[in-house]
Amino acid sequence: MTGAAEQRRTRATGRGSITVENDENEKTVIVMPAFNAAKTLQSTLDEIPPGIADRIILVDDGSRDGTAELAASLELIVVAHPHNAGYGANQKTCYMEALRDGAGVVVMLHPDGQYDPAILGKMVEVIRSGRADVVLGSRFLSPGGARAGGMPWWKRIANHFLTACENAALGLGLSEYHTGYRAYSRRFLTTVPFLRNANDFVFDTQILTQAASFGFTVAEIPVRTRYFADASSVNFRVSLIYGLKTLWTLVRYRLHRAGLRSRRYSR
Picture 1 (tube, rainbow, N blue to C red):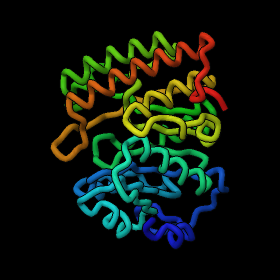
Picture 2 (picture 1 turned 60 degrees about the horizontal axis):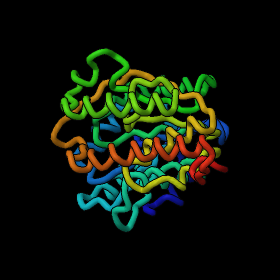
Picture 3 (picture 1 turned 30 degrees about the horizontal axis):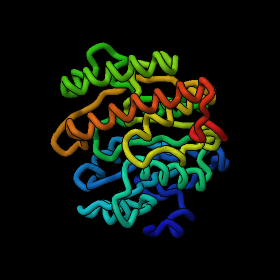
Picture 4 (picture 1 turned 180 degrees about the horizontal axis):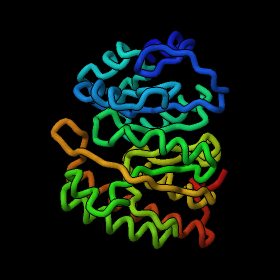
């Protein structure tokens, strides 16, 4: 952990230290799961609307490009994994650190600049108002949004197919389950056993099946995205493995509902 103990005594936001009047459970904490994000971190921070976050926590998953050092120099709270543990493992650390910090709302924003930070306020407001405990930034809620953002055609097709399967299994009626832009309430993160989820990309699917299993409301907000050379993206092989694991997660969820219990959906 790089300077976390010292920086927790201030209100580190990525824009300097500020005084915040919020109660502990009113804090909004942005978490950034990072891997080799040194080229895009500063520009992502620059696009975060002022006054949104009481804290920004970056969890570095074994980067080799100085991401952790850069984040510390930008006054973020930094937690550094000693080795690459996986995207799901990174998220687990993100959420545990945010909860320890007293977050009432936790927003996951990738530091690679792919997702537009401009909607952060809307995502937080949905949770603060009590309309939902999970908010997703959807690339498909606005017609043509994913194509306009540069998402490859094969990813669009795979996303539509998996989303149709997930809506059939979970009944949430979402336009997309595979966005990396998400906000959660403290109540949600302290209820679902997300630490039992996988350490890889299928964590994202598993936590939404937990939302369905525990009866939480999931809302969506349209988001613009940018696909470019320095934005993180998984290749076809990793995407295929992720898709197969997603389908198995849905089967396992339905088996749980049928009586073959899984600890993933139990307190």
